[in-house]
Length: 111
Image (cartoon, rainbow, N blue to C red; front, side, top):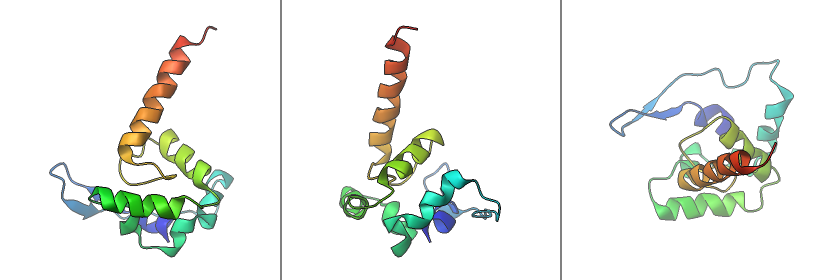
């Protein structure tokens, strides 16, 4: 399942793949993460969502396109500043742009 395996994937500062052991979801998990159990990604290997090239990003986006929890997934990645992988149908670059736009909108809005 992606939520278990994706959180165990990490990259070293030199770009090498390594792994980190993390308890995926405690039994008393916050309801805010229950959306992960309904994600289309649960039926695919985690590596699909951590592509090394543009073709891989497109494959992951195609899976995300009809996912019932696409918005929750994207918001989770933005809220937790997840740097790697495709979340909610968006690449790392797209999430950085969304986050930047939101920061700018927040600073421009009058109080």
